Image (cartoon, rainbow, N blue to C red; front, side, top):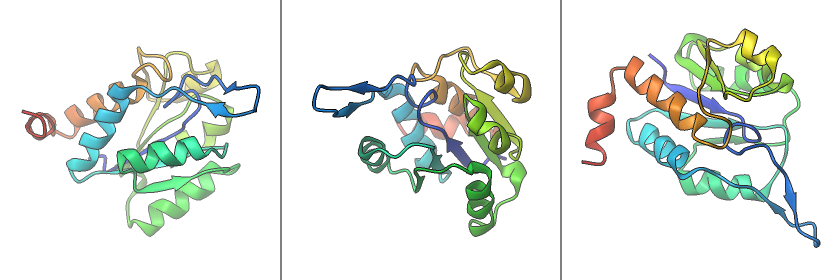
Length: 164
């Protein structure tokens, strides 16, 4: 049973595009379906972590908004941080799923029990993960992953009960 999902941001929670205004203010676009999936996953008693290579106040705001328990930004060695997190939560690697889309996610994805990439993940990641999703990053890929894990965890009835 998966108890923790680990999310990359750029290319997974967002479409990977970086938008800067003339004043160099950064913008990101997030999918509300991903957000609903994340908040419901947490309401089921599961955990969520973000491990991302970039630092952004926007990611902090979105993480807080969704109630994500563990946020790690500016991380170059994602697998090291993931190992430390798994140890601190007293989890087994097979109880963890992760989504990533590019080479900086490679080692992290190879540590976990279930690994995913959006449909537009790079070819090297597509070859190594357990599941290539039908959705592109930022377009419901995280929600698609959560839906798969909810079904595999036999939590669909509980997932639905949160909202109906």
